[in-house]
Image (tube, rainbow over all chains, first blue to last red; front, top):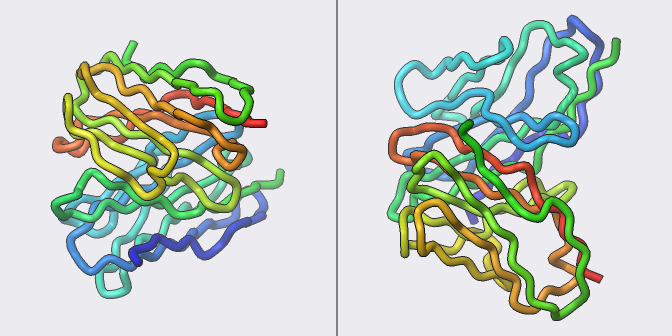
Length: 115
Length: 113
């Protein structure tokens, strides 16, 4: 079955530390890739997306992600986190097929940044 | 203001009592979708619609119905709710073929007792 895996369920780190969240998917075809963030009590917001082209994608709030096709991965990174980055982060994958409206999310990674 | 509006925000109901959660968007988006969010499971797609009168099942469609009679509205219907449908529900819309991101509503927290 097709799936999206996020390796860490909870991450705790200090301000100014670097963050990397893993995301792997199991689809073999062409995909669109996304990272969304959900701040406490809010709805999801798009951080960044990859459709094609440069596999290193820059998003909002200093986040970036790298698409490595051979590894079926789309890891999210931020060099130096802030307390305000405390949130839940979701990787999402859209497989470009006849049913291309289906968008599958990972289980999410809860990130807590301590002062 | 561009937005996706869901109602109600909170709903407590009893098993078997039909309910509808409304979703409306003012961005003229063709694509709309419903998700449920459960702890440890992330968001799972229930149904989506690529355009008016075009709907398709997501990953967890059992127990739900949708309709898309107008472009702006995409209601989620639970004909006979059960406790395992207690969840946080999100509606979203997008200009899917232009690659724009999903715009999410603020969510509906449903409790079925």
